Amino acid sequence: MKADPTARLRGKTRPAAAFAALGETGLRRIEDNLATLLQRDEEEDVHALRVAVRYLRAVLWIFGPLLPRGMTERWKDDLGALADAAGDVRDWDVFLAETMQPALDRQPGDPILHAVIDTARVRRQLARETMLAGLDQHRNDTLPALHRDLAHLPVHTDDGSDALRPFARKRMQKARKTLRQRKRRARHDGLRALHRQRIAGKRLRYAIEALRPVLPEQKATRLHRKLVKGQGKLGSVVDDSVARRLMAECLDVPPEVQDAAPIAA
Image (tube, rainbow, N blue to C red; front, top):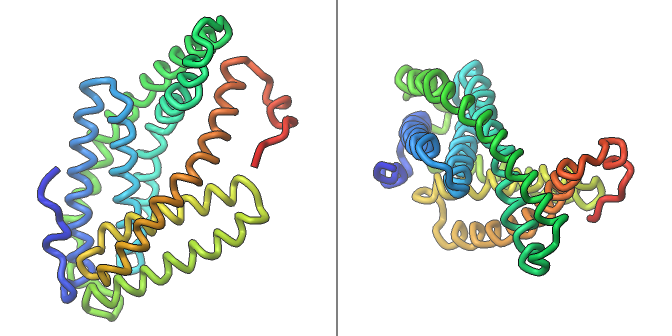
């Protein structure tokens, strides 16, 4: 990855110019991760790609209100598809590393565990082949189109604030408000609402990282630390749900039986 684009951000930077800098560096980061991922098979490379896409999606959310509507929608769709392309492989990687391996460590001779792991690895390999085909298309088609969008972006576009600092603080307030709302809903609405809360927390976390030079330092650092800690707890709940689904797939449990089984909160 090239030099940190936040080093060029100042309070008086025009918001669209900030998006152009962050967007270009974010795309290059994704391209670097794609190149690595297409050359070798390491689970951390899949995770690194998804983090890079997640970061750029947060940047898009921050600056979305001042971008041309068609551009915002196209970027949202393209980045979502890019994240989804690696989603299944990441799920299998987490399942094998955090569910099956600890179980095997406790019962190394269990034939059922070995059979489930073998099935999971086969399905993970199939998911990887599908992922690579999709990512190759994104590298050749999607990413060049996003670069062209940035090259033609009117850098004087803004929301009336003219400067990055007031714009950034307004968007941070919006992100925090959304997170609070989703926390309240997650207390009553179950796993789907919890997942939406997790997404809102990640968005706020990466927004802080992108905008750190124009945010109050101590407050931003404290909030970022709190978000990282909270994301770990929410991630465990969501990962447990995914592990339950993948285990059922490996055991060929019919979907109607899966749906009828209770889900731990």
